[in-house]
Image 1 (cartoon, chains in turn purple, red):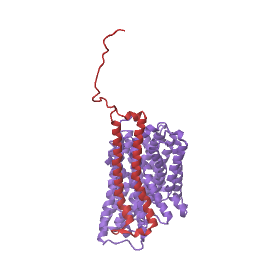
Image 2 (cartoon, each protein chain N blue to C red):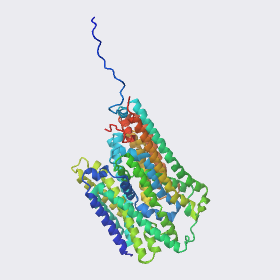
Image 3 (tube, rainbow over the protein chains, first blue to last red):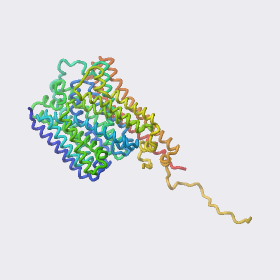
Length: 496
Length: 124
């Protein structure tokens, strides 16, 4: 059992700083609107840092380097896809989504389709995707604490869940915006400083190459196994490129922009911030091939500084990386918990005796405790893989809803329901297969473990065909709504 | 029939400046044909821009794995000691993504400015 004092101190510092900034932000939280969307007044630079901080999860911080180390260049599609997803979001969704004036995805769906049933379906999907994404964050926290302090895995999950809960309870969106922005810069520093030192060490050692036995496969940007490898790579690309726009914690951030133009500008800054960050994990993977071992891929980032830099300096760098990893768990889980809390408050607790801020707080407890329990009891899939499944579900459900809802007038409530159902069931089969102990080989395994390449087109086609078949149900206000989505705020319209 | 003095008529020149700037925004609100045409053209321009921005990205994402699938020996190709696939996916793609995003925003905002000017043109 390794007990690293600097790492424990680092984790404690991150937790305390997070709570302190959250409490400081509380001074600005006054109304329900503050809690949900920070009263829609967050400037692009701050908002972009917050989105970056929230988006760079355990999968980005720990998972990518480990995957690239073990599987090679094809795993670089994960960070590329997570960044490119923002370009797709920018181009197809950002400004219209902000102009729709809705708080959450279910709000958007209801406003566009005038259907309570579509709204309920979207609520369930937000909760499902949010929880699917939260579980690996909590599990990652468990292995991080285990690797650095020897604590049992459930403790890390509990610590992160506890801090997130306190933060969401105390400040809502307004305070979380400050916390997330701080955590982006913490994460970047925590990965950058050790990387610079370790590259220095590598240069000092005379630039050694990777150990013997690493073939040309490592630099191949697609999966192994011929046609199946190609399919898996393309499917991963589709899931990440199109899934980003459907992640509940990403979407809710767009409502905190003052207007559609700010939403676009924010997204471009996010692209730049993510790009800067994702240059670093491959450096860890490359150094890991020289100095590390490939057995514990998810903790490579945490252990590499200690392996490469001897003595106290190595301990300190390791502590810095651990702090960054904890920031990653805290920020992503805060954002996701907040998004899930938001829809629970609005849709599940509506009509009950709980109202306003109190309903928000009860919902927060439910939103955090459920995935925390699941994280402790569910099997560990590997962080990046589990997160990849959440992207596949988001790409198969919310992506068609948003893209068709924003750009095609003919979408109907029945069409949307059919498409959401088809996308959820087909990608859900993949999730169930990946979580179950049952496994198979060959094409069936490829199609089930990475379903996006067929489930996304299936959802789009279903949504389109059923909408055409029920064209009489196109809501009467659709023309006016489309105008509102696409007209710049400078034009003085009746936005009713 | 009595012939009285002709009725007084006030004669004025054409108005030199409009006092109230009525814009065409109400054409959109009233959902007239003109409003519909204006909105349609904005929507089409933005959608075309979106497709133009995303096409190179998706072409790259389809072509790169396919190229390496068909010609696996490419993975031995190195530029300055770094395998070319790592260089493309680990480094070079990011500035391209930012550039695509930046140019998209510039052009999307130009479309919106043009549209706003079209609407703001004072009537009569």
